Length: 170
Length: 312
Image 1 (cartoon, rainbow over the protein chains, first blue to last red):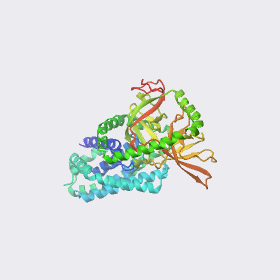
Image 2 (spheres, rainbow over the protein chains, first blue to last red):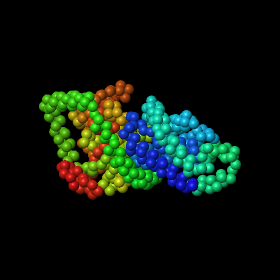
Image 3 (cartoon, one colour):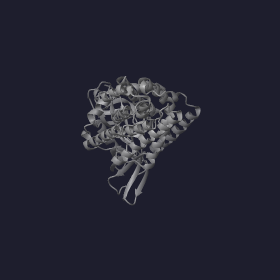
Image 4 (spheres, one colour):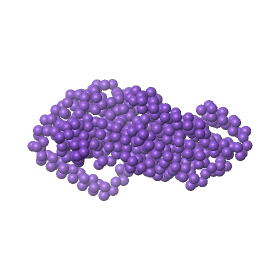
């Protein structure tokens, strides 16, 4: 079961990444697209156990770092998505999360991940960007991720819950 | 991964309350381990520079995901063309007005032909140089764009090493300079656009032949433009001048490729230098078909456009 869950989770990450770089640039607002890989990680965080989610966050981040057309310093999305997965796994409740809780978790995780990525860019000077530009990117990214939550999160959460019945919230 | 596989067996024996508690306990040691792993990767990549130990990993992931991106882009393309069918009369009227305006612009340029004649010789030399290079174009389509969250302006194109493309080749489209190839896989290549803040292109002002450096501004907006700084601080670039690349045949940018026109000139008293804004000819938010400049006669898996316009 666990191996199947890994395969499905990584497949979801790959599909999310491909859609994110091919389809969404056509709909992007000033080049800012929804971070579907982050949504996959949050969906896992709300349904399955934390160690799996942390490693999945790291793996999804690494995929974002290495897959073309990425050219930034590798490891930046990895650290951002690992921390976002940690945060999302903490706010999870014992019962099935309400719609509002899911949206709130997505917004918080998106804000944290994009900010950590942006701040790592400032620290590494990997391109120097203005603070106002960074704020715009972070806020629009949060809006995008929240907008896509109702379409992406429920099916993914159902999928993860079915693949790990011992964790499925009743 | 195997360590977590073993986890399940143990969890099943736990009673309800323990289970709920353990669910909420996010393992801090694992978080620290993964964050440290990420920082290790960052350090490796930063210190490695161009010969980074992560380059093979990038290449491997690119080989695996590149074809998927090409396929997805091909599937999406018919749908992205749909909005163009539903253009209203108002849009068309706007277009007519724009075309009339640009026509008038061109006419005034023609009227200034005498003034431009002395430039012509220089341009001619440049054009001749471009032809002499004997470079050919490998056509390719943009299949994936980097998001702005990732802060770099890069795209993937659906032609790679098999099409005869290698790192540091110049990428153009029918409007002008697009960027240069960063790395290739067998079937795809990653292109750094000239609007990326990290991108610096050697630029030459068409009328005065002054050289400078064109840096990306980090915006897809065509009006924001690129920054041009001339090497000679004393010269003031003229508005409306065309900026073309200068460089060598072996360097990343082939010479004589048009970059854009100068729209504004600012002089900075503090730095005692001139900064000009160059509006690129290429609309980076609507990139589709591009050409990669390869040496003439190179092997390719597709038809190559030779310098004289013939297909090979």
